[in-house]
Amino acid sequence: MSDKRKIIIDTDPGQDDAVAILLALASPELDVLGLTAVAGNVPLHLTEKNAMKICELAGKPDTKVFAGAVRPLVRQLVTAEEVHGKTGLNGPDLPEPTMKLQEQHAVDFIIETIMREQPATVTLCPLGPLTNIALAISREPRIAPRIQEIVLMGGGLFEGGNVTPTAEFNIYVDPHAADIVMKCGAPIVMMPLDVTHQALTTAKRIAALRALGTRVGVATAELLEFFERFDEDKYGTDGGPLHDPCVIAYLLKPELFKGRFINVSIETASELTMGMTVADWWGVTKREKNATYMRHVDHEGFYTLLTERLARLP
Image (cartoon, rainbow, N blue to C red; front, side):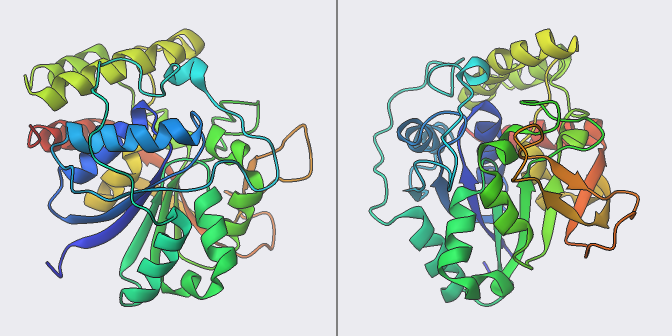
């Protein structure tokens, strides 16, 4: 057991979150200690339910799911039903979950787990707004130096933003939380739009998932067909970017990704550029480097890994 990487997935499912969770649950190298739900793509009462639906789809109803923050630290909640549908998981017809939410609050679970486990053995995998992570760090600052790594999906530099011209959705929804996390001192790896927009769900890739013929394979294909239509219309591409699974793929095969260790700062004052990840790719400031910012992904290798792993689920 000890060679498994212990992770907590902080999530706001979302079709791409769902695929990331399935990839993690299908991978024996990872020990998923729990899923912590946050408000983001849809409100919390849906993201917590969606997290449980995905665990049951994967045949892993023993996975612990915790409900977390119902809204961002400072700003009003912005959601993305136009992308994800009213439920957040539009596409397949997934049954209502029979498993129950854990009683404990997600933030307490994060703090307690990191303080209990050996230092530098728990990796946080935030796939949505960073509210839960920021609350945990603010409430118990001693967790920051004990975190092995924070591998998150968020931000954008060369691709700009996807919810405003400069801001990516996860960071935009709670920029103040992102600011706390980026300054916390834990090792951070960022999967921005610059990477995820290279990992497109082409018709051929979706067909390969459907061809698995399994419950998970078919449901994943249906999730992605619903999810991609928004970005196909917007960007004029064959397929849409598959954001969140890049986080889990990095834990399994870091060699699929290339990036640089740079400074990333978060804009929290300007309404024009609120939530912008100001990524100093060229090293033009004296700001201290705080994140490994990924820029390239081997997208063929990424989809090969995803399809091979999801084939292991029922």
